Image (cartoon, rainbow, N blue to C red; front, top):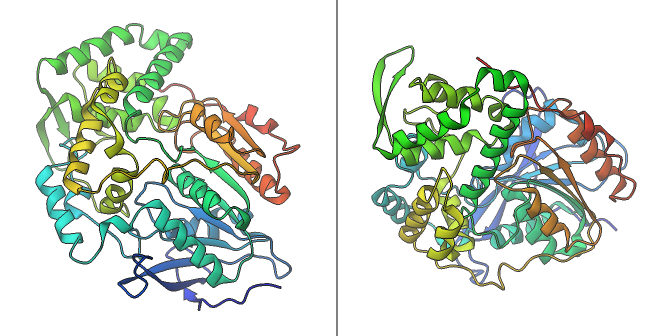
Length: 457
């Protein structure tokens, strides 16, 4: 017998979507060990199935970040990719600390220029102290969010659910699979992060590896090699110029022209972010060539030195998750080993360790970060040029999932976009969700997913 639905769903309007969707609010304890203590309200959006007949298991889409709200995907499911909702409801739960679920926002940190210091200690302390007035910051981790998802499942009256996560969303999916294995029919993980990964320890090494692969690919591409025949030397010279001190670069837009003093750490962190997507990877030789000649305009067009605009990202929630679950577990020796010889060096991990020291949450135990071992059918999609979540991580997680399959897309970066026939991924995922098994899954369309040509100007 189906469970009774206890959550009231009301009409919900999403900008840019013609139809009216559904949404509800669910009150849960902030600290489940104190059921009579403070409560928080979860924001849930339901994109209803298009069928009027029998529905398949609902799909819970788990947002990445951590810090992004799942409800931001409502318009994509409702208007841009309706195939997912042909026979199933799509459930989007803003994870506690994001979106409209008691968001933990740090405006001062969220709007800082991408070319300024990432984490000013005083700004981190100010946000921590302000948020702590109305929230127990120790209660906004992955495990608490997973218990929230279970409460939502029960309130919506679902017996079993499907899970789909991207990047950090794969951690949430794995923890849910570990805690509530009998409630999961199947799962899709894209850009898989092991539960016990010490983010951002491996960013520097991973970004270095992908950058070298880009340079290799340029050398093997006749047009790219002809356009940039001295690219490796130019890259070395560019880094050497930063080692001598800040590099003065001219920045201009429609409003003004000014001189910007670029420091190596922020510049290389900005460059690291550019390596996330396949299209920008294919533009990188041109960006590096121009920068080596003293022209940073192509770089500035993608990484602005101005303060950023407000985004949906909740920096406070990001620190509440990453500090105790990853960053605070990093040792000094690990930093030295993992960052040596990389263009990014220690900058990113030192900035985040410093922020976490100010945030003040202790590291979680190894037991709390135990991996999932299960027989739940799981499809793992991995990008061959993804330095954030490399293929080896997906293979590591898959080794404990007895009914799983890793599908590698050779030139794909961290974000699933920018390749020819991107629709292949949606086809794979929907076919897997329909079948509920990886057995006999046809992945032949992956061969048609090719990267764009290198940008030469």
